[in-house]
Image 1 (cartoon, rainbow, N blue to C red):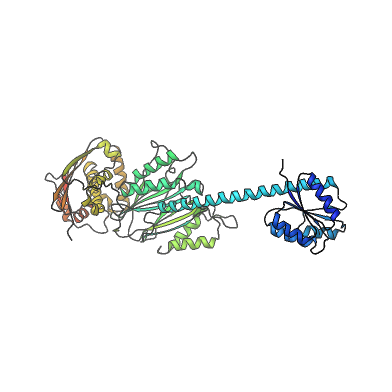
Image 2: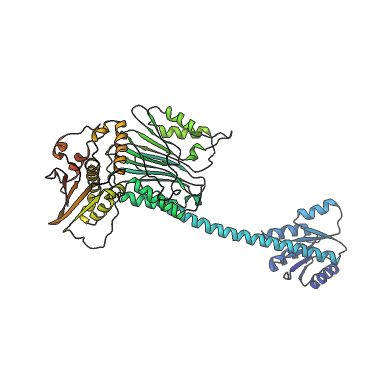
Length: 564
């Protein structure tokens, strides 16, 4: 049952006050009485009644002014006012409502009608109280949600942008459709000095779309820092998203692996719009076409991490866009589309202002985003000195310096396993080698690449004399590796303490026929050449580099502390 009310009765006639008080009390309510408007306002301030019976015409202060002041004092709370009046003219009744009245009761008073009006307005008052309580509850929940989202957004941004998006060769644009961005931009330096870049677009937008970004970024940055190859990172990201995302949620992505040393970019595109490689020399546009399903769709047995390789030169630019760019729609319901993007690319002159010109074209289009909008431009530079922050464990004790180990990786392992992250993590447990982590990874990568490609697979580097030969070289590499049945690559590692530092000896051998390392080192490869740089680079990064006695391997040596 509704709780009894405190009802204020403002009536200048004593007999009417008594009659109304009797009716109110018999209903079980508490009655307060005032002889004029001023007394009514004072009693309201003191007692805070829930309902008011107000005579319209009273001395000192009439009911109209008293009603206005009471409504102002009540604020957001609904305090119904029933005007008691003998007025019958329409204009007078309108004045009652305009002054804040919610209803009126004509004299002489009818007990049944008064009781019904009190009950009806009490229901309205309680409904208003419920609405205000629910509004306040929603506001508190919303404040709590906004606080949680602000914290989550800060963590999300820190994780997603913890790489090298601020690098001098990168420009990017992100315009989220909601608070959380369903598009993901990641960039990180590799231990070798190259760069991994990923543009991802999760299904939908907002928090549901961004939920997979954190684990994806964790895999991307962690595995890049440890020196894993692009294919390995793609497989791990796909497996993780397949495991944690609900059915129907996936991530379209384009992954770039840039090697500044080799002047090479490897591209994997799964479900994103075509990216473009724009060559600085002749303005040629090379589409980077989607050839795969998005990440998180296929299981590991069906996932394809095959990528395409393109030679690139200093000044070449790679442009990637999410479908939010192409789906931007103007007031005429036209989409920006791939044709408009191509038109900007074709008209961009030497390409130096390509990114700005695309932004200007989007602005001139006056479109309205239908999804998260992301765009990134990566420019090819000369070899970068920036490298990934290498991950390692630290027990707090000096690592042992006097040990040796040998590893043999055979045919079936060579097909599926990249030993470099494993070897690098082992060697970086030696504190003296950590400052040389980037050089160490580069040397291991070159040694392994030479042993596998030229030794075990018997590939000829001279194939890479032009772009067509370059593509043929890597096509043959994939075919020969897939059909490999025998062969091996061996790493022999030896740590020797020496005073306050030490030496690391690395000997790599393979099952190939061998070649004259000395002759290769004596040659000076052209800077314009797409091949022949590996051994020269190794000799520059190590304290010693020399061929094995049987010509089927190579010895290199690192020393620490390094001499100035």
